[in-house]
Length: 268
Image (cartoon, rainbow, N blue to C red; front, side):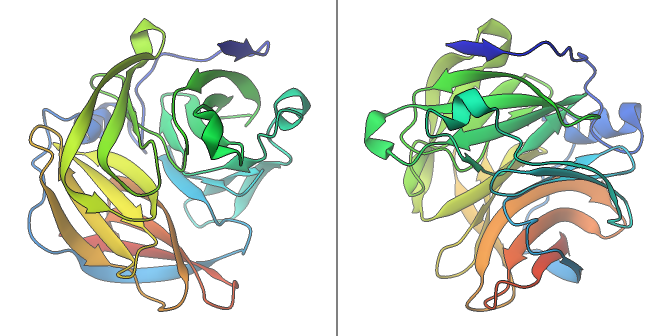
């Protein structure tokens, strides 16, 4: 099922400060996949509502909250904001939660979740990157929907059926979000909260006992733990992978006191 609003989008695969360079960084065929553990390079304080997801855009960031979206500059100063971001018609169906987002070109991909997981379906929505306005949504056959990430090289979307799982769901966006065979993982991951594609891997952030950040090989499904977030007692949330001076892995971790949200950065 596709629900649409009157807003258009671009097919550009721009993902960072420079569209050509960043596309090269983000496709699965051109970037070496960093191996080994990650090293934390620093962290920044964010407002407490920036607590669900993050994605890089040219010159800044998009952050998601429970039912809001924000666009900021590189220095994290707010440019624009929408909230509630989920249309009333979808909210009336119970969709009141936005998870970890991704951006390809001028489109924000956002997982929308309703709380009755037994229904076995959720929504993934598209929003305009510049205005943050809702474009449309598609039903996905998942019980839960904490994140969506899109490989810009293949336009394959990845998510997980449950927060705990041993497989990544996959969808062919170019063919109407056709469900593809899941990518089986070599180990069970718990409390998955976010994911992003970088190199030949998907990098997954969790709220497990480790606050772990995991690397999943896109071909073999082999899982290795790459890092741990800080702030014990807090809650791990969304992730972005974009090569920047601060590193290439950028994660959100809600402080144990709920304020602030920490924006942590890691390099290989």
